[in-house]
Image (tube, protein in one colour):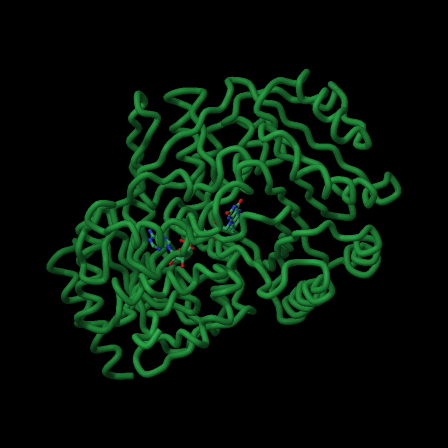
Amino acid sequence: RASASNDVDAFIGCLSKAIPCHLVKTPGTKSYSKLLMSSVQNLRAIMPGTTRPAAIVAATDPAHVQATVVCGRRHSVRIRTRSGGHDYEGLSYASIHPGEHFAVLDLAKLRTINIDATRSEAWVDSGATIGELYYAAAAVNKTFGFPAGNCPTLGVGGHLSGGGFGGLARKYGLSADNVLDAVMVDAEGRLLNRSTMGEDLFWAIRGGGGESFGIIVSWKVRFVFVPETVTIFSISRSRNQSAIDLINKWQLVAPVLPRDLYLRVVVQNQQAAFIALFLGQCGRLVDTMRRYFSELGMTQQDCQEMSWVQSTVFGYFDTASLPTEVLLNRTNADYFVKVKSDHVRKVMPREVWESIWDKWLEKPEAATVMLDPYGALMGTISPSETPFPHRNYIYQLQLFSSWFENGTETLEKRLSWLRGVYEDLTPYVSNNPRAVFVNYRDLDLGTNELEGNVTSYEKAKVWGEKYFKGNFERLAAVKRKVDPEDYFRNEQSIPPLPAAI
Ligand code: FDA
């Protein structure tokens, strides 16, 4: 213990030569807690008993990132990098291992966005949020969009590292499919770009999950085209308004709709909301819905036309009447979260939906169930093009549980609901392995164990193949090449591939 705290002191001493001391906070300092909590997006991960950082470095320059890695390695202090703090298990700011000494490298102030409008490209720092990116893109050109998730405070750093899925995926793929270059700091503290890091490492950082390979400082992204006017609707149906029949039909229809139409389902409070983003105007959307999904009864009255950037406000806040400036707000969460997720290849029989609804969805502790369609472009991209292998499913299923009451009883109830549904879904969802999206981090799948001084590859396969299928071995091979000593390590980081494999 004494030697660990000596290591931390030596680490901080080392940092002081490269980083102004007001940017480094330790538990005794005044604004440590404020900085720690500034982007915590899940109170479950920071409850008493979890291990908090021995220091937080609020980097404002890539040189600070380099110095943190160099000093961290020199003095045996590991780093957890935090961009937006949305990791569902809090891996960017807390550890499940009691007594672990680590520092958080907080990138929230590294957030510049530089747009090259003539090339429809931008360099965006990891500490920017996707809301800021959406806003900046639209401010330059209303027809610039970017395929990413639907929560504006998501950090670019973690989100792109894990793939990044959202309403433009059926037409343009994941965020990671639209990354052209990146600047990162490796385990030696070197600043690399695409040409100096090489194509294997560039492949791994676009979907292989955060933390494992180094720290991405900046990403060069390609904007995609969105029309000046898009159309959205949200139609809710209760069970006695045929919600189950409609979900059943949705499974057949949503993955084969034209690529301009993304139609998701969100089941909450015993209502199934059918929420659409259409890259076009109302008239064409009504025709399309009539042709593919007349049972929903969608009409012109359901349409709301707006700019694409305004639709991202609607996508998260469920109202289009807020100004787009809300995309620039940075908030931390005042609730607890646990998520489980899955993928579906074959429509689930109607009776399964009936029994899930009867047995689970009527309970007060029920999670929100989100069904997000794939198909269109997603289905045409090879599963090995990026580390994200789940291209050939019809949809993604997410059980998102969030609650405000602190306490073990509530936590246990929530967890047992999630685990119970996950278990009951087993025969109808992905198998061998169960397919999970790494951005929906879930430590129930397994956590790393050490073998000697590095993470065990064999043990990590248990969770790793669920996230990455056959790409897991390639990710581990990249890790062996770029970080053989396994400096960048957390509960589910990619282990180095053993030399014998
Ligand atoms: P955070 O800072 O917690 O980082 C996540 C992981 O990446 C950590 O392991 C961290 O160490 C590492 N990391 C962070 N920055 C890094 C960097 N610069 N270099 C290397 N490693 C880095 N996902 C999705 O695809 N679509 C969606 O619509 C949503 N929606 C959503 C809503 C809400 C409310 C939450 C809480 C989460 C989502 N997500 C999501 C999941 C989200 O994409 C995922 O948690 C991302 O990793 C979040 O990135 P942050 O930078 O915010 O997280």
